[in-house]
Every structure is written in structure tokens, then in C-alpha cells.
Image 1 (cartoon, rainbow, N blue to C red):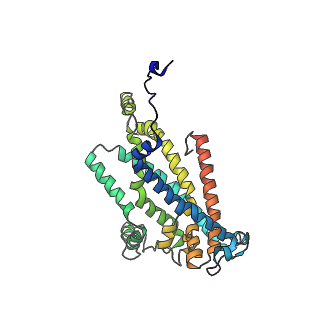
Image 2: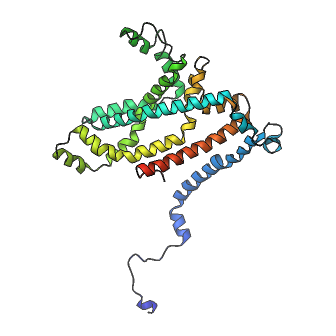
Image 3: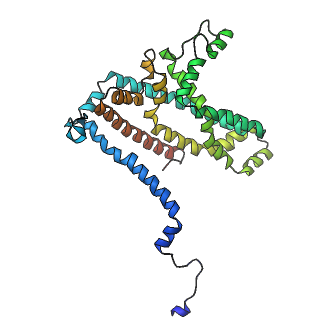
Length: 317
């Protein structure tokens, strides 16, 4: 068939040259390449500093001039009492946080979604979101005021109700540190964490609820059999991400609320790395800890993702 006799087929238009497409999408390319450059400069290039974990680093000799010590810093980890204490505290805070925050967030989301009064619903959402925008530095001041043994509103209420006879120093008693800080963290992030779940609920087909109403299903039945099953996927993804960041749990809490009286329960892994690296100047040891924690974090995320895929059929990848 000659060119003059060629039949035009819809959808078979000639592909535009690369430079034409690039010019048309230039703004998108700029943002993509800026993001990629940021990732390379601040995430991948610094990975070269991992070599510090295998050296006796000091400023004068630099990274490459410092003496090579192999795995000695990693061996030190297993005989370091405070490292073991940090592991216990991090796991304890993480398990308690996950065990309390997920049910609280999901329950709050379901109840908030059932509100029919739009104005009242928006007020509740706004009030619940606000604490998220308060930094832990400000939150520490608020907590110290609220939990004061003599003038704190919490102790005053508890004493007036007859639950306690005298004020409790919540932040000075190590046995109360975990539950106090976890509850404070839930209060701070509860409203913000519901945003993702509410977005998923908004995408549920309304015909499912209408059919359930016709069949006589009440509100709680609709939540249990329609809303919750649709949230399984996002709950799994959020849990996977939480497991990936479990080793970094509690840095802000420890940094602002740690003191000599609660140190046995406030010393977390992230805070211990900060203490050894920036406060004591032992960069090699702190880098060794961070390197090991990164491996553990990645392993936990991959393991949780595999388990989620097996149990629910849903995961990050």
C-alpha cells in the first residue's frame, strides 16, 4: 500500500519529538528533578558517613584519616547497660502507643463520621486538629502546668473526686512516665490522624449504606460491616509505616520531658543516639547504633508488609 493509500487509524497519531514534550511538561520536570536532587543530597550522599561506625573518628583526622576499628563499636552495643535500657523503653513506648492510639483513632473516626450536624462536626474536627500544630516544646509547658502536683488541673480534679489524697508528680515518677506521655501523644495527634481514615470513608459507595438501611441495619452494624472492612487496607499501611519508624519512637518526648527522676523510663534509642553523638561527642558509637537501628527498622517494615499481604492481601508493595 502506498503512502497516499494509507488508512488513518484513530489513536495512531505520530508521537511528538522529545523536546516538544519536554517543553510542554517543563514545569513538572523541574519539580520532579528538584525533589530527586533534594533526596540525593540529603538522603543518599550522607549514607557515605556510615563508614564512621567502623572507625575511631575524630575531627582532626577526618573520616578517611581516622583509625579503622572494624566491628568494635558494634560489640560495645551488647555490653552497654544504657543501650539495653533504651531498647526496653523504646519497645515499651511503641507497643503501648500502637496498642492505644490505633483503637482510639479508629473509634474517634467512626464516631465523628456518624455525626449528622455538619457545623458541629466541623467544630469537633477543628478542635481535635489544633493540638497537632503545637510543638512538643510548647506541649511540655502545657503538660507541666496541667500535671503539676499542687496546681495542675488533673490532680485537682482527681483529688476533688476522691480518687487520690495528694497530688501526683506524673512526670517525676518513672512508673507513670510511659502511660502519661503516650496519652499526651494521643491527645496531640488524635484529630490529625483521623484525616486519612475520613478520606477513605468519604470514598465508600453510599449505595452500600442505603442498602444496609433498607435491610434494617443500625448505625453500629453499618460501621462494623461496611465502614471497618473498607478501612482494613489503610490501617494495614499505617501500621506498616509505624513499624518502620518504631526505633525512632519517643525522641521528642524524651528530649523535652526526660529528667533524672524518670530517666530509666524516658531513655529511648533515638534520644540515646542524640546523647552519645551530639552531647558526648562519640560520633562513631552513635553512628554504629544508628546503622544497626536502620537495618532493624527496614527489616521490621518488610516483615510487617509481608505479614499484612499474607493476612489481608494488602500492603505497601
